Image (cartoon, rainbow, N blue to C red; front, side, top):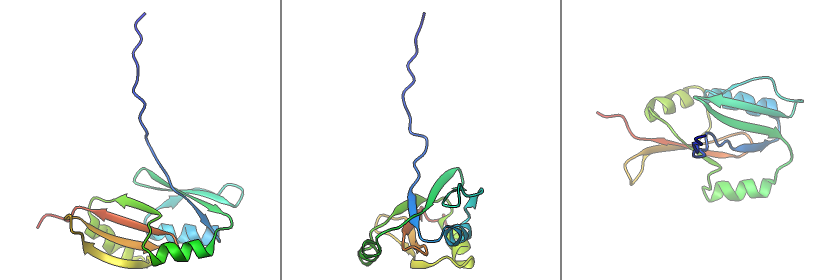
Amino acid sequence: MTTTKTKPRVTSLAPQFLVDDLARSITYYQKLGFTFGEPWDGFYAIGQLDGLELHLKEAPKNDDERRRRRANEHLDAAAGVEGIEAFYAQCTANGATIIKPLTTTPWGTKDFYVEDPDGYIVCFGGRPAAD
C-alpha cells in the first residue's frame, strides 16, 4: 500500500473583534462590503468578503487599550486588496471611518486605515493600478 503525505496548509485566518454592539458593528462592516448570516445566540457573527472572514463577538473590552492602540497606530488587522484605489473609493462612498487616507508607502504600495465603532484599526493595502 502506498501512502502519500499531504502537506498541511493553513487555508484561512480570521481576526475576532470584541464589540459593544453586534448590530452596529455588522452595519459598519457591511459598508466595507462584508456580508453576514444570522448572528449566533445574538452575540456572535461571521462576516465574509471575497472568501475571507471576520468574526465579531459582543463582549466587554478594554477601552484604555483601544485608545493606546489608536494613538500609536497599532493595527488590529491588515488586508491585501487588488484594486486598492477602487476599494478605497467604495469605502469612502459608503461612509467608512477613514483615519488615514489612501497614501503611497515608501515600498511602493498604497494603503489606508479604517476605524470601526469599537476602535479597531484595519489597514487595507495593495499595489497601485498601472497608469
